[in-house]
Every structure is written in C-alpha cells, then in structure tokens.
Length: 244
Image (tube, rainbow, N blue to C red; front, side, top):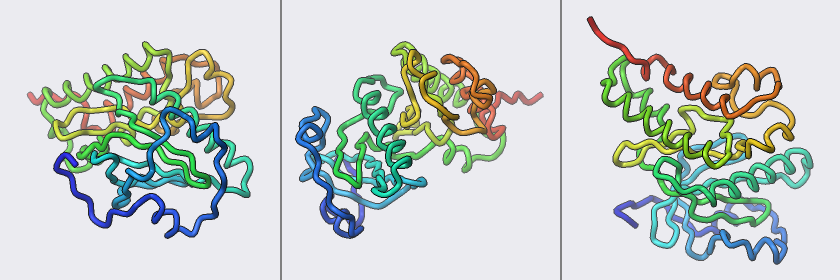
C-alpha cells in the first residue's frame, strides 16, 4: 500500500449496502470497457472531499493507495442524470488517454448505477488551495512560486497539445503529491477543442472563468490561460512579491 493506511476500510459492496441504494443492472457492454475496475480489489476509506453529487474517498485498489471519486446518479431526475452521465463519460474518456507527470494518473473506473466511480492516484498533500490557505500572505519564496507555476503550465501545455480544454482550472483542481509537485485534475467539464462549442451553458467556476465563457461567446484554449492567471493571483499568495 506504499506506506499508506486508511481507517475504516470497507469493500465496495459494503459501501453500496450502507447507502441502501437500489440495484440496477449494467449492460454487458458497460462491463466490457477496458478501464472497468475489478471491484473485488477496491476498498473504500474515509471521505475527504465532496460536491453536490459526488464525494471523494481515500482507498486501496490492488494494494495501491488511490482516490475514489463516487458520483451518485439520480434515477428520477432525468436532466441531472443525463448531465452527470455525460460528465462521467467525458472525464473517463479524457483521463484514460492522458499520460503526463503533471496530470493526475487515471487508474480505473466503474459504472454500477446508481453509483459511478473514477479511481485515480492518491495525492497526499491535497489541493493547492488547501496549501495556500495554510500560508501567510506573500510567504512563498520566488523559487516555490516558480516551481508550482511551471508544474501547472507544463500540465496545461500537454493538455492543450492533446486538443483538450480544461474549462475549470482553479486551485481546487490542482493537487500536490509527497514531493509537492502539482498535478491537474477533474476533467468532468473538459472537452476537445473541436467540440467545445457544441455544449450549451456555462462550464467551470465563475471566479476563474474567462469573460467570453461567462457571456457564452465563442472561445478557445485561451480560456484556460485566463484561469491560470487567476490561479497565480489567488488569493494574493501566488503573486510575485519583491521586498525592497
């Protein structure tokens, strides 16, 4: 387990039973996906983050420390169900083809309605935002700022070279490992640049969102560059600050 131990580990089946979720049958095609996880090898630990429809747990998969993003798919809200299923499909399709030191590593996924999961490498130091919140204003050295900024830019440069726009780049979607290197994560709202205009409505988070996206105008990968600038600024801790 690479030195990681998590409290209260439970099997995937026990997690489902504890939530009293209804059982839906998955089609044979879903079970044949090459990225499908072997759920008998997946054990769920403590939750450390959550969203409106998802939560992220520490876990163990095939003796490896992992993060498990569990998405609850509602059965009676057709519109929400459709959106969440599309986000899951998009995130898995993108993550499973991305290989770079500054992109969080995809390991496996599963579709067992009404719960879907995405398994990725475990990043022990949490998000960049968590790291910044522990620091005093302007306390980061220029060397640290450069290292963090270069890690992000390298990950984004690779992403763009693959024709992908992230669309939700922010400090909460940047993770730190034991060596304090940054990796980009969360591709639920990402898209191929050639297909982004086909999606309707705003994507991402307004505080980091480029004006053209807010106004729902035509946009390019440059919207990620705008978000990168906000990351460097927020919350006045990743700015270059030279004392006289």
